[in-house]
Amino acid sequence: QVQLVESGGGLVQAGGSLRLSCAASGRTFSSFTMAWFRQAPGKEREFVAGISGSGYPDSVNGRFTISRDNAKNTVDLQVNSLKPEDTAVYYCAARRGYGLEYSHLHYDYWGQGIQVTVSS
Image (tube, rainbow, N blue to C red; front, side, top):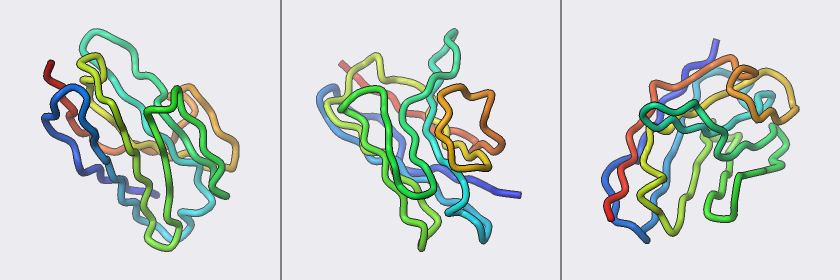
């Protein structure tokens, strides 16, 4: 069982930056592939960035940077040049195994989500 807790959300002006953090419980954190998803009102949950257990990252564009610290059981998401369309609830997710998946259906554990609002 893995518990995920997100932090760092809030209200940001367009053009600003934000760093989200996810703290995970459990002793086998390094064996999980981690990812950040987001969901805006009326839209489907979408992949933002992910990182394998060995640290191989991927993201939808260069404004999003994901990193992990296996010693601290944390995974962070740095978001730069924020836009109003980035407004959403951001979720931390974990899946067993080393492969990075882009669909939320492949993830086993989820945080409660954290609101990010970008004002224009």
